Image 1 (cartoon, rainbow, N blue to C red):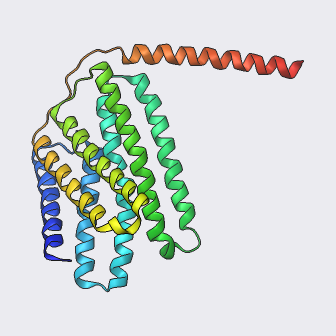
Image 2: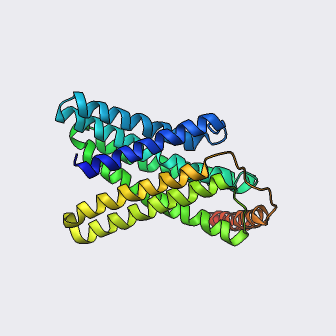
Image 3: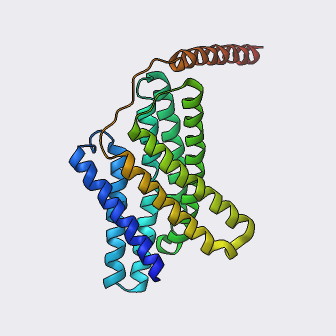
Length: 254
């Protein structure tokens, strides 16, 4: 690694350590288990990479890098999930539906990646991880846009903790998607620019989390029309499926 790359890596690593230590002192792990599960995964992954870089061969480091990158791509979904869990906590109906949809999407994307790894896992690990990361980032971008739309439409209140999660990770995901879009359009000529954009965006996200996760700040409780709208839409959907079922049944009988 170059001097600047090393400095950026150490800055990110120390920020992650700071977030973890501060969360431990403030007892935030139990409040936001998915988010801090991701932070713990990143901390362990970066420690393993540094260890392999120092003591292992280039080939072994490459294998370790792609394994931790694969796990990190999946683990990053935990931040999006934490945002949804915290914002939709008071709205049981919508939360149940969201949980089912998000779990299904994640399972399908990961299952596709595991199938592609079959046969020659080590050879396919790099390309499969890149594709998995691209797919998950795109899905998360859509999910974060959806939750921002819900928050703005229903004026859902958020505490400082959840705000920092959403702002920091949303900024990082947005920059990541932009970087991948430029790469798909201009090819490998923008790779250096893409990598640095992602690194600096992640540092910005960690900085936001350092301030936002300093202490526990729960979401204010406020009743909105989310559950009422959900129940109305759910009832309409059920009636529509009922009419469709009756129509299909009558068609078969005739």
